[in-house]
Length: 315
Image 1 (spheres, rainbow, N blue to C red):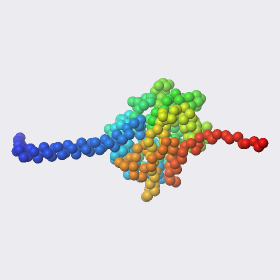
Image 2 (cartoon, one colour):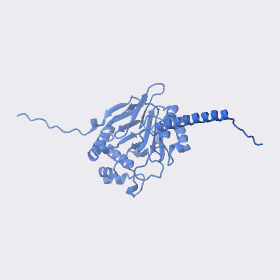
Image 3 (cartoon, helix red, strand yellow):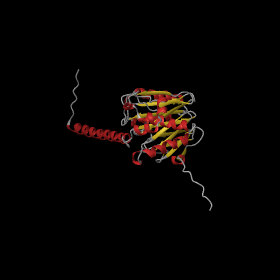
Image 4 (tube, one colour):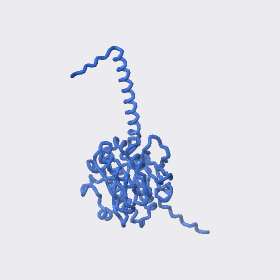
């Protein structure tokens, strides 16, 4: 049986008004959503990390999936895959989830977030990629993971650095012993972040594992090699017990919540619609996040090589 519904003149006008109203509402919410997603779309990538004695499940899920500026939403402008890493149990080797699909189109991203959030990890870290260097059509290699001196390191970068500059800073013998994880012998396929990580680990080993002096030395050498306007050096680094976040060239925020289950987090974009309790770092600032202490913010120049001052000779 076919039911024919015929509208009279007044009904048509009422329907038209309702249709226009609904269209306006739909366009508004679409615009509002895009306003969050498109905010500062100049970033090559986006990164996020959290540390806690037991990272709250709801916080991880909201930061990565549900909030307006979650990594899932931001992945519309960073659509070359995603990577998530977490340490569980404490001090164990990090467990990694990756894919080449954009996070906002990939149900396995949501599944990985649920798995990690339910583990209540000590450290969890995530990254969404907009490829600008090396291999592109692969699962997001960030966060990069390496083991050195019985410490399991992870590293992610938000920016682009000349691979030639990095290769000039890495000793050939160290590169041979610690080759790039992607690209094999094809140097054009190497990823700048992979080399950035190798360079930092080289400096860390040279300075006997002293984190801040090593990061200061690495950044100082990069400053000497890269003009100020071309420095996109944002990163986070973790050994599973501490997170270090460095800001230069792109935005980087951190926050600390001491209520109930205390946690600290760092992100290239605060996940919420407004900044709320997130604090923005300035270029050249390094934040150290741990379970035991509130965030520590320092100027990286504090760890640059200090010039030697010769004592004055008495006449």
